[in-house]
Length: 334
DNA sequence: AACGGTTGCAACCGCATTCAG
DNA sequence: CCTGAATGCGGTTGCAACCGT
Picture 1 (cartoon, rainbow, N blue to C red):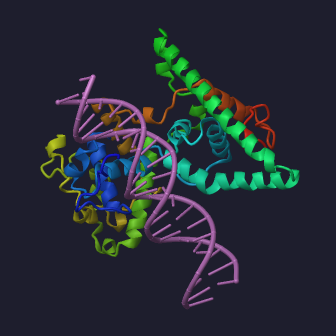
Picture 2: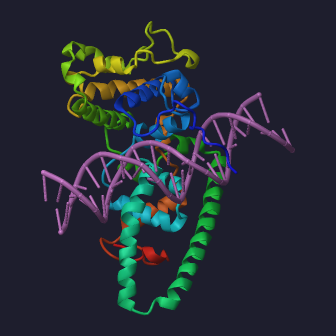
């Protein structure tokens, strides 16, 4: 049976998000933090269902999301993890904190699966006698995959238990991220800076597409960057911050037209102040509301993770990095 | 230039799980 | 403990951009 869809109400907008909607959502979350998605449409005036808001945030607007091409290392990790965990994209994404599960899933479906198929095809052609044995070897592989998955789950659960029971919590709290993961973090770039880049990008696109924008006064240029980060934005009197009355009344398309005139478009070049201020604001939110953006992107170091990174570090440049891992189709992928 | 096919990605759908009353 | 609602997750779809003819 299943529950009826939450979004089949009349008047709920579907389809691609507009920059205006993105900004309204980001602005709201900046004030109230992610969560309580049910309240988001009502409080923001967005004609989207809560689910859509959550998805937009987690897959696109959330701080720390890296977009664009996957690196070879990321690719290897995905293949490794997919072989180990199967299509558990959320679990895989937890090992690639800068990527969303949707992104990884898409990348797998569009790039890596094809790549694997191609290689499988080559293998079958080269051996020439797969046929009857391929199905059994595949079932063995699937069986092995499940066993490994089970073992990993048990391993992870054990480790988590040990960590939870450990008296020496200070170390893990002080350094919740592995050194290797820390190395991957771009020095000096705040988690929100990445989000600012996202917003900057979408705003740039918006500016391109919006004929109105060019007509707008540049006199707002000073207020734009600060007001975007100012929690009082849109509250009119600037006094409302409770979720129940936190409607971003000023965050209307008209309001944003004024806010983001051509001279105010966020670009990587001019968004430095924005990034710094945004960082500060999010830190405030972190401390005030207990929302931990940083922690969102910091998966704990598990044995699996350690193995993955050790493997990545020790991996030869080509070809045989999967030797001994019994990863079936993954072997010889590169 | 026009058209059809392909690709990549954002967003949606529906089921599963979790949580609060 | 039960029930209904919220949230999480993976599969799938829709569509714009790209490419070849």
